[in-house]
Image 1: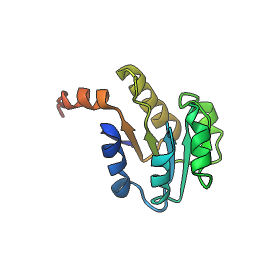
Image 2: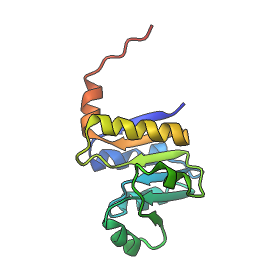
Image 3: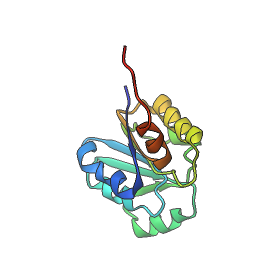
Length: 138
């Protein structure tokens, strides 16, 4: 069963890495932008792969040539599944202007397709919504 961690802001997102990522992990980062978080992840795991559809892809490749980046839209799950890795952790930073429905859609898509141990997402709107919820267990 996949565990989800919802964070707000880059600092909180990155702060999860030391406690959540192990040296044996293969991590997918969706929405790497400039590649900074991908680089941080690389210090904690066996393998990290970053995907992003944006033009910052070229900057990340130049800045961190030792890392593996792909210019793939995070919603193109078939392209992600074509990568030759079995990802057990997923980091998602696409929260810029995403609505709750879209954010939940990508979480469920990656949970279903990859069945990872953990998904960490930077999504302030989702965190705010979840913080207002109460779960009743029967």
